Length: 331
Image (cartoon, rainbow, N blue to C red):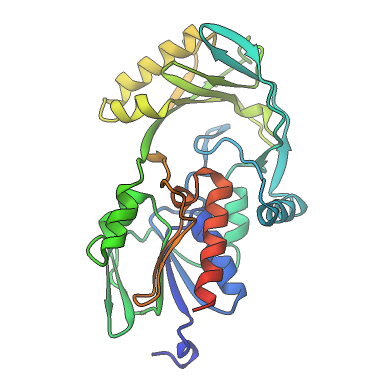
């Protein structure tokens, strides 16, 4: 073992979404040596922004709120460093065939200039191995060994491992290690989300910046250009509802897109002349019941964090990672 790690100070974190980044930054601040492994080419997970020729669209998380004092403090840091700003959208609600104005008074934050900006900010100073899909982990001689699809078995070994992945991926990777993993992940009903991004040459004649939709294929529509820092071609994000998305996740992309756009047209957003892109989030929402916050197995030095073990939402993800890091530091 590396002498600098003789006190159990090396940690591998699988997944560089908000939970993994939060866990890593906190552990690093507590003196741990941390390596993150991320299958994508950048950080932030579902706090993501898609870029194209002259356009961008937040196609994952649309905004976030802050309620816990710890996360409020973190968000204030993001605001101070100008990687997040407050969003003041005009929101309407469609329910029972009628439109009405939202009565919600919540403060909504967005990443600036894109939803992935807070994640990029957290990633600075961290040792992240991108485009590394971890396929196998094993605990041998009190050390964790990792193998990735791209690089095979990694030479570096770790004292601790934290899985910051969606529940099904956590189960696939660690189910054989301990029955707790099977129990926790089985109690999480992760659902998919079909997402359509529509670009327009002129602003559509609708009266809202964002809309909550009930009892329809679509659950959310949002004008990306209404958010601070967004520029370029007029773009909209349309999320299908989780139940419909899960039921029809295996539809061909063209068929799913056509059904979503038909619903959007019925709701007043005519995308006939828009340029369209579609993304399928296989694991978009869901959480354990009861809420665990995070999971840790002290003997195996195995841990789990993520929005799905802490009630969902961006705040839940960040809190899960932060609190897990504190737990590890006490063992």
